[in-house]
Image (cartoon, rainbow, N blue to C red):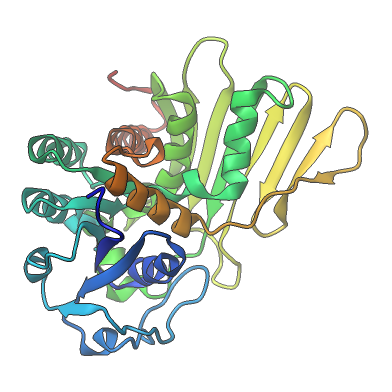
Length: 348
C-alpha cells in the first residue's frame, strides 16, 4: 500500500450519510472514491434528489465521472481499485457487511454505530484480527472542531480541571423515517443507538468506559425517544451527563452542544444559539468567542481513514474497540431507562 499514490475508496450505501461521505471525499488528499455499489439507476447517474437529511444539503446532483458503478457489495469487493470500503448502509447491515469486506481483504470504515448488538461488534473485531485488515468506525464528533476544542481543553487543563460536562442532542423525528428502515428500532437501534450514541461515544472517548450508568427517559412505540444519563466514572472525576431525543416539533432545527464547567471558566456551545463556542471566565461576565478553524468533520475522518490505510496504523480516533465500548454503554443506558432509572453496572 505504501507505494500506491492514492487510496481507492469504495462507497456502499448512498442514502443521506453516504451522500455526505461522497461529498466529503472530494476534500481528501491521497484518496478518492473510485467505486460505488447501488442498484438505483438515478444515484448511479449522480441524481440524489430522493435523498433527505437532518442537516447540511440533502439531495442535488453529483459528478460521478470516473466512479465505477457496481450493482452489489459483492461485485464491488472484486474491484481491485478498491482498497478501503466505506460502509454507509442501514445500521442493521453494518456487522455482516463489514465482516464480508474484511474477509475479502479490504480495509473498512463503517459509519456509526459499529453495530446494533455488542455481540456483533465483538464478531467484527475478531474478523478484523483474523483478516489482519483495519476496521475503523466513523464517530464524527471526535473530528468536529467544536469538540476537538473541548477534548484539547480537558487534556491540557487550559482553563483548569474539568468539574462537570453536560452534552445535549435534540431533533424532531426525521420526516422520512416512517416509510423506511429508520423507523424500525430493530433496524436502526432506535434513538439511543442512532442519535444519543454520538455523545456517549465522545464521553467514553475522553474519559473511558464508565463503571455504571443511570438513565431516565420517555418510551413510546418506537422505543426510548428521550434519555437523560449520568455516567458514573472514577472517584473524584468530573460529573458527566448527556441528554438526547426525538422530541422537537418539526419546525425546530437539529440542535446539539455542550456545557463544560472548568475550574477557571465555562465553555458553552450550542449549534443553534451559540454556533461558535463561548468562554465565560471568572475575570468578567462578558463571553468571549473561541476561535476554531472551520473544518468539515466528515472530511477529517475520511482523511484519517485514508492515512490509516496508507500507513497501516489505525488513527486512534477511528479505533473500533472504542466504538464497541460506546455501544455497550448505550445498551446499558437503555436498560436503565426501561428499569425506571436503576443504576446499571458495566463490565470492564
